[in-house]
Image 1: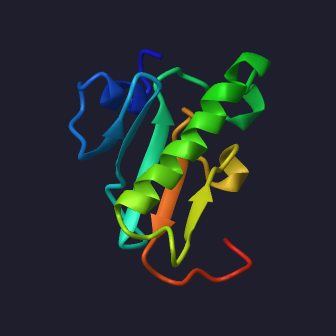
Image 2: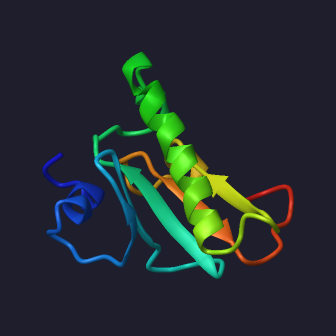
Length: 114
């Protein structure tokens, strides 16, 4: 998408601090972290939000979760726990309309969220 900030980050048009990258996804540190580990895992394929996930995207979404586990393990947070968050739509707090998953760890999180 032409004006999508995450597409621009993926394409290297906007700088970011890369945490992980492969053929399918790009993960980078959040600019305003709310936990010691707070990165965004973004598919390279532009999908607006969870409502637009198609059947052919199932493997991609599964891959994103495997990447989240990999990052959490590499950063030393898998044993104590971590949170994976996806917001779908404005009322849920989605501000960038390119599906992305927040990986948060390094502190205790409360419930209910939000």
